[in-house]
Image (tube, rainbow, N blue to C red; front, side):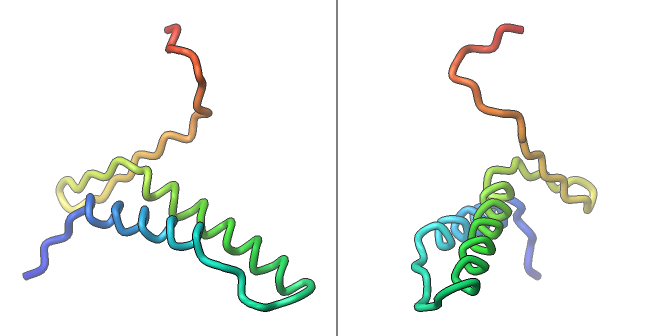
Length: 78
């Protein structure tokens, strides 16, 4: 029986994000090239968000917590 590991899933999404980030652009021109770049950016964003998630599997329910708050360079003030 295969056991689902949410941490392994998150790691796979991290790998997918890196693969999208480092892949080259195929030899296409014009509007198709721009569409390819836009789709790659969307794919990277989606994969990276899930790759940064805190995953929990409890009672058969998978919960992904993704902090979308902007990162700040200063310490928390409150």
